[in-house]
Image 1 (cartoon, rainbow, N blue to C red):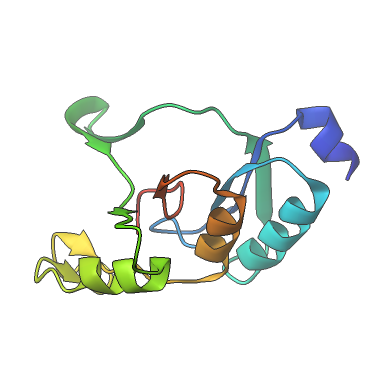
Image 2 (tube, one colour):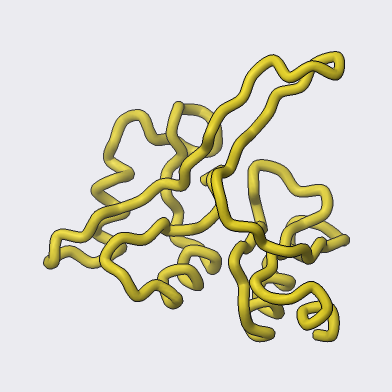
Length: 137
């Protein structure tokens, strides 16, 4: 874990050759979180990258022939509590939106509860949270 101390927390752990944000864990601050994230990322690639986490807007650029031809600001899916429903129930409600589908079959992606979401929820201490920090889901 020397690299965690060398890079400094928080960090990002992600597969080197991943796609669509699969296996990416953000805003990790403890050795235990990084170890778990490393195991998750390893399921998507033989090589894993650990780098500094820099909070801010997530912007995707489309570059064609060396020129930026499009840009989009991406936001993670969220749910808002009503004081009664569980997080799982809130996610199920959001997933009923007909614009949500699997992968990129529809404009919005279904929210899946996986290890990354569970880790994000475990760290949350507020009423409003992003269910994960990456935006591809």
